[in-house]
Image (cartoon, rainbow, N blue to C red):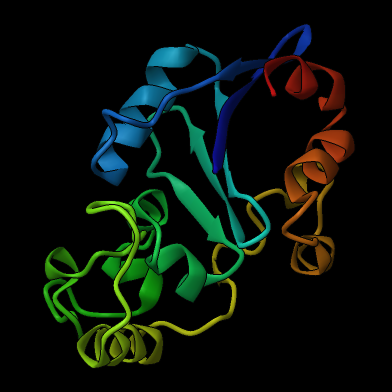
Length: 178
């Protein structure tokens, strides 16, 4: 199960809104969604998949989005995580994929329950080797908002978004959209 929310910083504090990512296919789509949600300067897109991984996308005006993902390999197996894991973020040349991600059933939900086969295990192993189980992205993404790199890296996937919102002073508004 996924949770996604937008936090927009306003003159009066933070405003939260629940967001659906069903129509989001690319990072550009996600960035546009954040910019449409608020005409304020800073918008954070917070995404989590249960206790597997979380991601933060920060959009400041017209600047390029800044991204942080807590576990790249776990996010790579997720349709929403795949949106965040750009070639640049993973340190790859564009189009230099180790695995053809379009052919993989990354979240195991397209055709019901995933089947156990040697082929699936080989594809999963190839995917895991291509992307490590480590954080990727801008570790200072929230430093100016009160969450240091050290604090961000120490977050537990299970309650990371609540901890971030608490540090920003936005815990109550985030809980209203959960």
